[in-house]
Image (cartoon, rainbow, N blue to C red; front, side):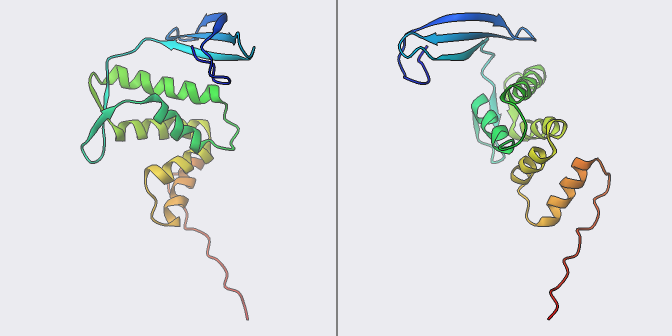
Length: 164
């Protein structure tokens, strides 16, 4: 395993344990060159699921792409990397349970929104704004109200005009 700090391929496993749901092995490693420690996860490679994009094109499922989108939505929010990893694990479990070969990008996006809504309201609205491609501020209000748990969004507040 290549050290993420010094890029040398010389390490030892310090600790190894199974994840909570037994789908991965977490390993703590120590680089024998720079002496820094880092964590790796070993998982079983499932069948190659492909993602069907909006335009009909297909590409291999990429966990890193999912994680990058969720991390961007959670930027500067009190959401740990561990929670983001759990979210990705839950979405992958759903994909593997429901699909054999292909999954739509829409399904993945809806799953991310479902999980983010439970995790962090701000991250949920951020992700929704990109995923749903909001055209104006009223769409933001709709998702903000949805995040608050209200059925119908209220009208956005009217801005007062400066007097003069």
